[in-house]
Image 1 (cartoon, rainbow, N blue to C red):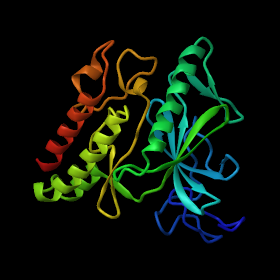
Image 2: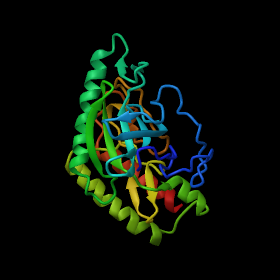
Image 3: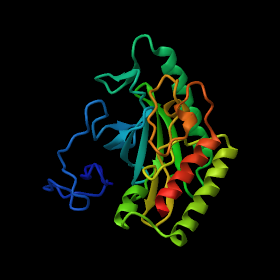
Image 4: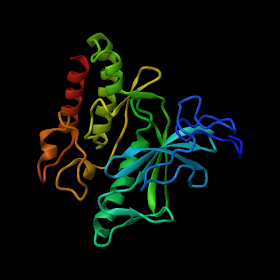
Amino acid sequence: MMENEKLCMSCMKPLAENDTVCPHCHYSVDRKNPAGYLPAGTLLGEHYLVGRALGSYGDACIYVGYDKLLKSPIFIREFFPADFSERAKTGAVLPIAGREEAFAACYDSFFANARALARLKDLPCLLPLYDIFTDNDTGYAIYDFCEGRSLSRELKARGGRMSWNEARPLFMQLMTTLSALHRAGVYHLAISPDTILVGADGKFRLRSFAIPQARTTGSPIKPRLTAGFAAPEQYALKQDCGEPADVYGLAATIFCAIT
């Protein structure tokens, strides 16, 4: 990327100086991120450029971004538990008064989760996490970018289902990755067609990881659970959720994909 090169904030591909809409992904050049997110164009860690906000998963905001050193698009995960934090005008993420203890506990959990995923970055069905750092009084994790669409969108494009012969090798590889995550003590707790990315190569990647507090009832964060795919114990107070919940979500996703 040239120092003054103009990029689309959605796909991070070059734009001509007079482009008002990206010719690659049709994203409007003057479109802004919603209130509460970092503005597109914000620079993090001296060389990570923030692009379009993709959403929030209870514990974090997710953005498309650009690594100016590697000259490649990325995904950025920013610790921002919206239930008890707020964005300062400087961009800093601060705990709401009286919720400092919950913020600190979830902050530690965010880094523990990110470090565990970084150690497992070579698993075939993960988006590799290759950098973790602090900025804006909060934490960030940087992932490799992968073009594709969610399994839910893929199924719609296929008329609602895929054959078992098509699905089997894809899900078998996902099971292998999930088994390795579980052996390392890492649980996803939100497996569904929306959290599986079908890459341009046709392979599955498990995305949208979050800290356990964002996916269990009775934690400081209001859980974001997907009806029909979240396990029953995720709705119960003071229940430990782990491998069985992921098995439940995976089984429900397989059932959805082939029926």
